[in-house]
Image 1 (tube, rainbow, N blue to C red):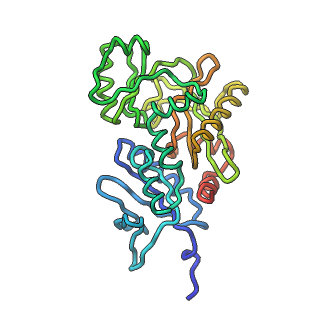
Image 2: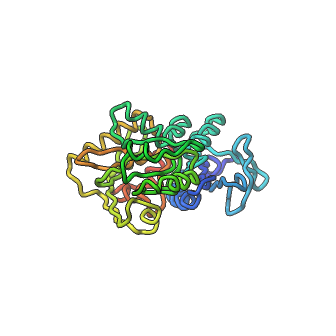
Length: 327
């Protein structure tokens, strides 16, 4: 029997959901990826992972995933995936858990490896690691659940204002800009709701920019830099996803700054061995860029930076997705 075209096309799992507060953003990001997969080359299938379980959605049908081999049955046939495009922000898609699972099954995926994903997911550990490679980062202290909060020590080390945020969270959930010592305990408790550890970080006053990058067989490709201007005290959830900020792409910064930031982005990506699409955030203080965090599964919603950067660079998201799958 002759095989049809669809029998030979690669089946791509577009994986959304997760177990964190970022599930809403993940679903929107996955929709963007799904709509931009080249259906002449691949068969995209939405896969959802959440508290209810793992499900595939071929032709709109909800079918449970067989976790022993990441397959599903449909129309009396068993289907396996050739590639996993991970679009889960937070656990288990950004912290290395899914990557380790796919490594055991020998299924290639769109992100960095499980150990690098785990490293970058903890902002404090990642930044301290990068600091050893002479990457400038903000001064920070890690707080673990159950530890005593010594407000006097924290203020003497970090000063005020300072930021308190989950060490292993995203989308600006659980972040507080602390301006008074008495706010510290409440800010730490708020951060713990969205993460297992909390970072207390010195305040850097400067211009906030972010730089996307993606990797193909040809190497790393930095995207245009974006500058964030917001009326809020910082780039919070409302500023990110409710249009309460101005995002200037490409950023109106001196050429020398652009060259330096893109060079740092490539250097960090090489140090970490990042794969797929990533984004690195910075604060520029007195012309010096300080790395804030590395995002290995950045937002892909229409409001997110990566799609806007790709558009500003006159590139095609569809082509980039194809190149990432190919590499």
